[in-house]
Image (cartoon, rainbow, N blue to C red; front, top):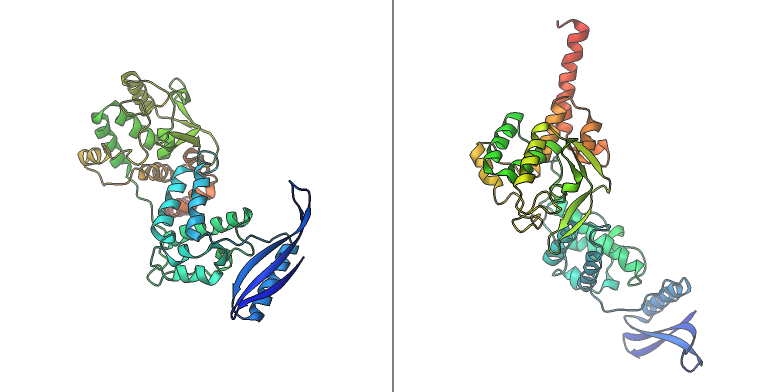
Length: 378
């Protein structure tokens, strides 16, 4: 393929890209297909740009020029992600991406740039202008990186991914900090909390007992169906999780794998009592008064703080009940791979990384144990 340059006026040129012959589907006539692209700059720069376009066309990588901005593409990209909910993407993920795009990326100079003109330096300038936590910056880099990757896959841009090619930067006010140690109740606090939960009603008693017993995630608890509860065997099978309330959407677990969790007899009893008392027995174990799923955002908001206050225990997040399960099991000497399987982690190394502080305590205890054994307690 070839190209030519035609000067429009000083400093402005038309780059004429010859894309080869094309047959008119109506008349059947063969004509040459050309693409005229406006370029502003010196003639030498215009010649360089034309050479790049010819090379792209010859390699099948030519992309039609477009005025679409980064913000406009991100809006289109988010709409495509929402259509995949419940299959390979979670509603909570899309919600996080949407918040970062609408609050930070779209209103920024980077968001107003034309998608095809973004270079690595533009990405670096954007991140250098922010003063946000490292985790937030990482989320935004993930969003932009995937969005540009999909833009190239869909023929919107050509060349290297500017996010991938940019240098990783951190805002001046942001510095790496040690990983947050998960909050967890002691066994005594957990017992006090469950006693208070039993006084709050049959559903809170069953919900919070199951949460602390199984270590299940919030979405897994709200997506649990009675058909997956075996009261006789004392087990639940976690097959799905609630992804979104409006519309009500369910999907596979975070790892895509099912797991069977054995329950304590008291948890089974509380589930049985709850089933008998449930006003509208539908598919789900825990529901609102009308039988619909409890909202992901509001689970625990209606009674959790009151039960904590009544129990007189330290306030922790709903998700920290899951950390309590893992911490108590590991402190009791349960093997890491067993705890990992109960929590539904993809692999034991994840459990080891999250609960390294607990395992360190166990190592200290092991050191004292072996010392007593080999030295006779001296």
